[in-house]
Length: 95
Image (tube, rainbow, N blue to C red; front, side, top):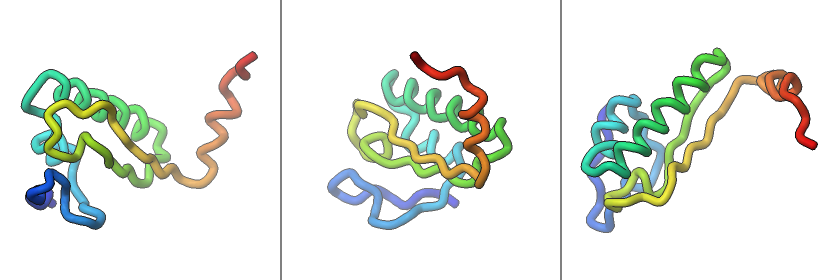
């Protein structure tokens, strides 16, 4: 499940690319401290999401999955299984 090569414009080819977390980190979470920091954040986010037992899919997109040397942020969309919102009902309400 390795990722395809980046296009000359620095982006992945159009489409959805299935990859393991180690593949994502190996291609995009190395090279400089900023990319390493974002790679670590991604690993931690997915660790917490998986610990709920409700993670179905995770989509990583944006500048992190390009050849930009210093991505500004980490864009991730998590699909959780139906009924996951019960976790939010247990959190205290913000005033």
